[in-house]
Image 1 (cartoon, rainbow, N blue to C red):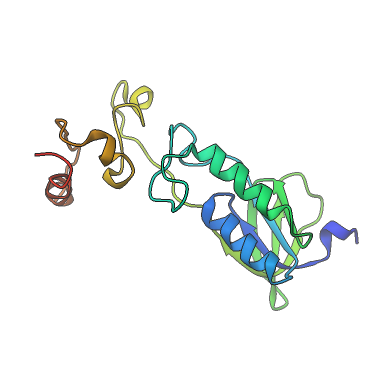
Image 2 (image 1 turned 45 degrees about the horizontal axis):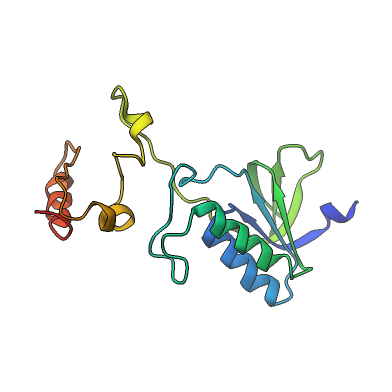
Length: 171
């Protein structure tokens, strides 16, 4: 069995701030950690991130670059660009199947830090305006949009709650 297929103490699935933060902590604790990410972050089209202490208004790709540089100081952590296809229990551990590997990876623990995916409604033009006029989170974009006319697209009882939430940024 090659070195890549030995038992990992943890495999982290995902490559965003939560995943990389976990890798930093575990790497600093001298745990053998593998981070598998497909490099398709939710905020890929965002110009900047908010609510990230010491990095407010920093482009998301810069945050990830800085995080990867910090993690590179820990020889116990390995980062790979691979898509995980399946995770199965295996003798008190887990078998992790990733595209491009002939054999499954084995890990004592698996941390899923894959984030979420935005599913946009079928409305003409919405994809082109996503993060450039149409936004999903007032905490992420509210500061720049304060005191401007804002609207909500919603078809359920939560829409009223979102309208009330927006009054913190705009009348």
